[in-house]
Each structure stands twice: as structure tokens, then as C-alpha cells.
Image 1 (tube, one colour):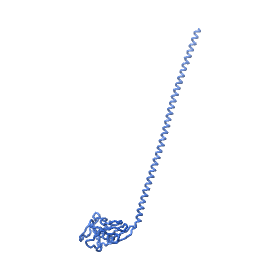
Image 2: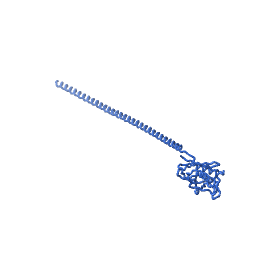
Image 3: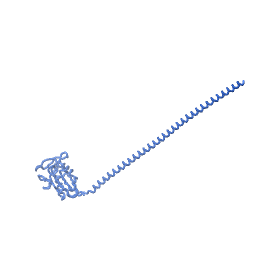
Image 4: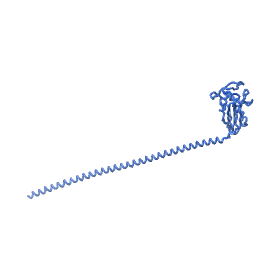
Length: 263
């Protein structure tokens, strides 16, 4: 009977030991799972934290980029303003220079005093349209010609050869004592009128002059100056000490030459 009771007690002890053992293992696994879960949560939290940190970092970089872009935009705007100001300054300087040149030109015109020192006119003996045309062209070409002090004036170089391309027409001319029609008839009356105006100024020295082969009706003998391009010319040297200007004009009745001294 005692042995039986001992066996029962031993069996109960074994059962209690097994129960205790299994309960302990179950708690250990629960703790392990709990710790694993906590660890996973912590890892996930760290990841989220890292993501948040990276996001914040990206925000900071974006903000920095936006700031840089704003700065660049301001710099570009400043450069444009600077270029505009420079362009405006250049435009102002150009306008000032142009105004200054205009003022200088006007001052030069004002400071150039013109004084008439000689004048001479010859009568037109014929109303021939060709001759009138040639006189007008020659006077227009000669008008406002200036001769500097010490320089030589040449009628042929100034007026040039009479050609139909310049508008000259045929009119009476003297050639070897005969009267014929040729381009430029009438030029000799302009050169003769100029010659007689030059004779009135002692400081204008005649260096070349040719008489006609016949007497001409618009001037007395010995006072004419025949011209023929390439053969006969009328020349004089300006020794007045000043630049002179030649004014030439014609009407239906007269050819007039005036010589002005520029001071």
C-alpha cells in the first residue's frame, strides 16, 4: 500500500514537472516573439525615420536649389538691367556726339565769313536754246567751287568735257576761224566771264589763257578766254592768302561770275 502511494506521489511530481517545463517554454517563445515583433517594429521605425530624414534632406536640397535658381534669376535680371543701362548710356553718348558734330558744323558755317572781292557779267547775244542749255549746265557745275590759297584752278578739270551724257547740246563755236555747231557751244563765254572777274583781283595770277581765232560778240578784243577740253584751258593761282569761292549763274540775258573771299 505504501509503495502504491509513493508511486502516485512520484507520478504527480512528474506531471507537475512536465507542466512547469511546458509553461516555461511557452512563455519563453512568447517573449521571443514579442521581442522579435518589437525588434521588427524598431527596425521599421528606424527605416521610417531614415526615410523621413532623407525626405527632409531632399526638401532642404530642393529649397537650396530654389534659392539658387532665385539668385540666378536675380543675377540674370541684374545683368539685363546693366546691359540696358549700358545701351542707354551708349545711345546717349552717340546722340551727344552727333549733336556736338552738328554744333561744330554750324559753328564752322557761321565762322566762315564770305566777302565779295570781284564780279563780272557778259551779255548773251543769242537766245539759241542749245547755247542757253549749255550755259546753264556749265554755270551749275562751276558754282560754289572753292580754291585754297596757293592752289591752281583749272577750268577744264572743274567743268570737264562737254558730252551729251551730261546734257550738253550742239551750239555755235569757233574752230579755225569758222563758226560751226558742236557739243558745249557757250562754254567759252563762261570761261571768259570768269577770266575778267579774276583780272580784278591782283593776287589771282593767270597762268594759262587762250584767245579765240575770231572776235567774239560778248567781250571786247583781248579779254576773251577760249577753252577746248584737252587742248586749251584757263588756269590761275590763288595767292590771296585765303580760300576763295566762285559763284556762277546765268539768266536769259547775262552770265555772271562773282569771286568771294572766305575768312
